[in-house]
Image (cartoon, rainbow, N blue to C red; front, side, top):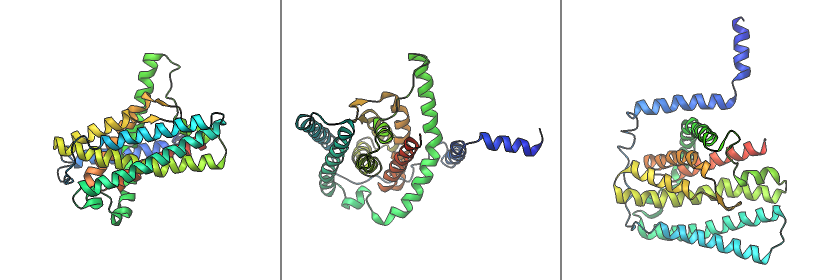
Length: 288
C-alpha cells in the first residue's frame, strides 16, 4: 500500500469524534503540564465572600423537589388520560416552572448572603463573551475523559450484568427523538439547553460549591463534594428514576464545571459548558 492510499484509508476510518478526542487529550495534557498535574491549578482562585450557613443551599434543593413533585402530582390527578407526548410536555413545563420559581428564591438568598451580591456570586454580564469561548475550550478538554468514563461504565456493566448490558439513554433524549410534535421538541430544547443548565449551575456550583468551600477552605475538595452531589441527585424526571450508570460521566463533567467556576469566579462559564454538552446530546439524539 502506497502513502496516498494509506492516508486515504486513515481518513475514512477517523471520525469527527476521534478528532475531538485527540484535540481534547492534547489540551488536557497541556493543562496537566502547566499546572503540575493540577496541584497549582487553583492556587490563585479567590474564595467568594459570603455569610451562608452550611445548610442554606439544601433549602432551595428541597423546595425545588417539593414544587416539582407537587406539580407532577396535580397534573397526574387533573389530567389522568394524557397521551404520551402530552405527559412529556407537562413534565417539562413542570421542570421549567419549578426551576424558575426556585431560582427566584436563590437570587433573593444571594442578595442577602454574598458580598457584591450577584457579581460576587459570579453573575457578571460583562464576562459573558469571554466565558463562552473559555467554556468551549474547557468542554473540549474534558470531552475525552467523559468518553472514557462512559467506556469504563459500559465495560464494568458488562462484567456485572452480562454482555447485553448497555447505558440507557436519558428519557428526555428518547422523547425528543420519539415525538415529532414541535411543542414537545421546543420545550425539551428550552429545558435542556437553557433552564436546566442555568438552574443547576446556580444551585450546585453557585450555592453548594461555594458553601462547601467556605466550610472546608479547600477548593478541590469543594469541587469533589458538589460534583458528587450533582451526579447522585441527577434524577431522570421523565421516567422518574435515577440513571446510576450515568453517574461517572456526570461526575467528570461536573468536576470540569466546578473547576471552571473556581478558576474564573464566573457562573456563566459552567452554565455554558453545561448548555453546550446538552446541545451536543440533543443533536446526537435527533440525528440517530
